[in-house]
Image (tube, rainbow over all chains, first blue to last red; front, top):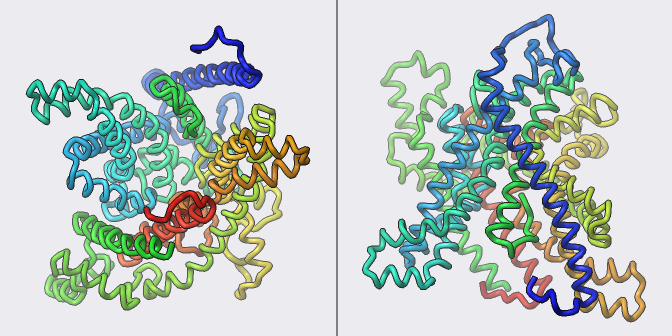
Length: 297
Length: 321
């Protein structure tokens, strides 16, 4: 808002009002997202220890009850309360997503920073490899890894992490490349700092916001990935039911015409995804205000 | 242009070599044992000598690089090994199923382009209007919704609740012959679900492109000449706004394959993606390896196509890259 004194052209006026309406919806979206994310975190952290209920408690007399005040989400095919199952499933999915995103971010940051800092043929080879592995569809690579290493928590985490570090490596590399030509780096180099010190002390802190943003955006994607693998029967074992497992086991009930065991786990996946994306979008606008028009997800 | 295409195809060779080697290396590092997989339950009772003999016969005792190279040279002659789960050569599985997957994917893309393009133009015409906001929110929600979940709900609603469409498969279970009508009615649900999962990005791109084009000089000029709004929208804005999105279709092959993996499994569509999932659940390495490489090749072809189309759509882009 530099030229507030100048008389605005009609176009500027239009843009400004346009901007104002957009800003208010943006704030609304950000606040809603923040509330939902808080609720999700509270639900997965507080509900399991507080409500001392067994989510595995089987009650065949109550099987496949439609949603009711006693069971807001209904019950599944062996009479387990679906609301409780969904909260526990979200807990598992979120945990897997968080760990996978963390591992992927660490690998991606290390590779991207190393490629950019060393430059030359190291950079060229590393980036060619990144390009090569980007051309294998992520889910397919994940399916392949899990199939070879047998389904389980760690193969799922590893397969999700191994397919997701590529984009972080690209982001971190380009960020380091743009930081490398800044005067403070020249100052550090001429001050006699070693290459490692320049990377760790001066470059990495500069790329942290971007890497952290990529990590946050990766969490819902990793959750999606995990549920897709679990749905295909290649994910977590059924005693650690994630949202994907819930949908997988709901398939037989769905074919019998009962929709609620399928519907609610899916909503538990979509709503946190949108909320995290909304928050991350607002954050991105703050750290990088120029890229407003970019797609959020 | 031919030179650029040729160069890109040459670049694809090392990429495919690295990917195949990666596939073999992962399998080599995993606890997966091809001998046990081949022998099945018989492997539990047979003697160690027999197992060793089998190991030698299958060529598994050779080092990783030799096995990889043997596979490559055999693959070049069209021999991709035998699939355990399908009980036929891998090459036959692919030729049998590739057509059905292509049909599904092409129909889905068509649905996404027509629906997404139309909605995108309408949304861009009145930016911030109710249609724009509704379609925008719906697009983000759909982007977040897992394809398998959408597929299951669509199956429940249209096949079970309304009973208007078949729930899955290629033909009815009681018919042996594949007729056009049967396939068409069975195609509707999977193609719509796959199309809808591809719709959000296309809609958002077209909307952005058309909205940008509406601010540009040609559109202003056309309006100043008194051209009807319809011609402005579809003749000028859509043309420059939709082309970039259309050229991106090729680069969306990975997302399409991901969607197909889930949608084909949900609807038991006899395509190549459903075969991949079957191969993975029963650890059928020859089939899985071939399909992974095939998918990578499809992605590379898609990227090439997208670049070529972009060059045709926008002559300012050179073909040197």
